[in-house]
Structure formats: C-alpha cells, structure tokens
Image (cartoon, rainbow, N blue to C red):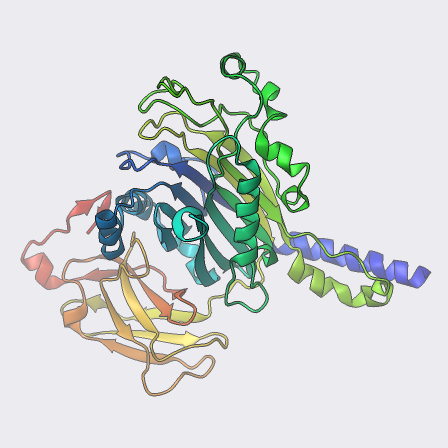
Length: 471
C-alpha cells in the first residue's frame, strides 16, 4: 500500500512539473445578443473589446433574431449576411479569420480565430436543432459549433429558448432536448456533453419570478441586483436539475438586459410594460472527471499520460457584463471573457507550406509543401494564396490543387508551380494556406512574404486601402 502511495505521489509530482512546462493560456471572447431583426451598428469596437489587453485569441458570437424573412434569408445564403460582414470587416484587419459559422433562420453562430491558431483548429462540425412549433420551425432552438483546439474538444451552443414568464419548465426541457439530440460525426465526442468544455449562451429567456414591476425597477435603479437573484428562474432551476448544476455562471452584476425601448437605456415604456429580466446569458461546463474505480492503485503508475490527455484544461471567467452603449435592439448584448489554460496536445501543423524564391506577377512562382504527420489527406486539397488580413478560408486571391496523381509520403517535399497569370498584379504581404477538404480547415500556413510586380510599379498601380489594409 505504501509503495502504491509513493507511486501516486511521484506520478502527481511528474504531472505537475510537466503541466507547468506545457501549459498555454488563450483568451476567449463570447458575445450573445438578441438583435431583434435590426441591422448592425457601424462601430462594434466596444462590443468586441478590440483594444483589450491581453489580446483575444478566439471570438465566438451568438446572435438571435437576425432578420430572416424568406427573401432576406435566401439572399444571406448566397452572400454573407450583414452581421457576418460587419464582424469580418472589423476583425480581419486585426488578423482574425472566420473559422466557421452556422445559421438556422434567426439564429447565427460565428467563430473567429487569430490567424496563428488556424492550423491547430481541426475537426470542425456544426449542427442545429429546431424547437419552435413542436420541432418543425427554427425560430427557436439551438445551433452548435464544435472543434478540436490544440487537441482539446470544445463545443459552443447558441440557443433561443421559449419566451414568456410561465414557460420555465419548457425552456429547461428544450435545452435538455438540444443536448440529447445534437450529434457529431466524431467517434470520441458524438454528443455535446462529451466535449471537454461546453459554452452555452443565447437568449435563454429565463425571467425574474414573483417580484412586481415597481420592486424590480427600484432594485435595479438602486444597484441592489442581489435582491433579484433568488427569483431568477435559471438560478432557481439549477437547484432542481442535476444536469444544469454542471454548468457554471458568473455573478449577475450587470443590469437585466431585457426589455428596453430601442435606442435608449430605458426599460419598456410600451403599454405591455414587460418586466426586466436577465434573458441573455453565458454559461460553461467543464467535463466532470469520472469516479475512481477500485483498481486505481494498480493503474496509478500508468495513469499520468491518460490524465494529461483528459484533464489538461482550466477555464477561468475574467469578465461577465452587458454593453449598454448599443440600442439598435430591445436587448442589450452580453459579453464574457475567459482564460483557457491548456496543454497543447500538439504544437506543429499537419502540413508545412512555404513559398520558394521571388513571387511576382512578372514570372511563374514556386511553392513547396510537406506532410508532417499522417492525416486523411485528399487530392481535392488545395493551397490558397491569401492577402494578409483575409477573412475566411474561401477569401483567397488564387489557389492551386495539391499533387493530383498520388498522396504524399510523410516529410516528402513536393514542389508546385504557380503561373504568373494567377499571381496578383498589385503587390503586398501574403501567406500560403493548405486547406484540407476532409478536415474542412486550413491546416498549414506559411510565414508572410512579399509579392511584387515590376509592371505594377511601371504603371503606377497602387492598392486600395480598405479598413486599414491594402487590397
């Protein structure tokens, strides 16, 4: 028994040393906002806290009630909707790329990552669940994005649940239904709750029960928000429902975000005089550790690697607040900042890609790529030439297919020629990105490099400046 305890202590000490040598902290910024069919404001700097320090690594934006009339919805499927545009236009100049998005009628979920993280975001999948009209209508429900971030499985769920004061149980049932029915084509994380970390947010529509309108408003105006917490329906339901108790939430130290007169900080003055409520919420759940088994002592010496793989992530909420400066909707947006301390399961890209020699529209150019480790590659994979500040994987200037006749060996260096006609005439800073069709993401990025052209210089061509970037 003493030997087993010594083994346990040694394993734990080794794990602690290893963890601090390998841990890595990333900043996550989540926004949830019921935009009530409004068009986006011109300036979203405050919403995204673009100048915050330390800088953000991941942005996750969940919107509800994006305008979804039939004509509008169809046009948004053809071209990006106006909300996606404003976020991309604001984030791309700062080096953020849209990783993916998912839309279900008025529900929209967007994920952006700092460019340097792109090769380490893999296995991206999205799904959605309708709960409106008994599951036949998508005005209510949930949309989800899941992916592996440096080897850690994370999932984001944006919900719009049933409205009205008396539908508390229905809201809980709808969320439980979303958790049970959403699935992913990933063997080790087929369901939402299989992920190491789940972030749940949206217009969850929970209200403040019992209190009258006068008491609510006087408590809010005097800053005594704590008097309202015990009657918040979500807090009350967490005490009753075991699956909700696994979700954490920061303190509600901001004013209820619903319902406001538009373009004001005044709660509803219409004839209905709806009671203020914290309808817009952001919660998270770290996957619980399994209960220890009886033969743990015998497995202690071999458990360190498993622990490193299973539980190398710490989630800390640094901020939970509303932004009262926006008035286009009858809801105020809610933001949350998190620090994700994690061990990188891997820190090398699957593919190394690099430009060779001088790149110019005056002559053909060369690039090389090599596969660093085995993955499900395809002859449909391609390498894109991206202007620094690109918005998404499809925002390339040109692309070339990878070698067509056979898949490469590990570390085999493959050279591809790019015709000068495909190279942009206007110069600037560019990167090469290897896009995997099967993984559905960029899994290799080159360092930035200069593209120039004598012809452009001779003709005096100057790139257009858009949002601080040369286009």
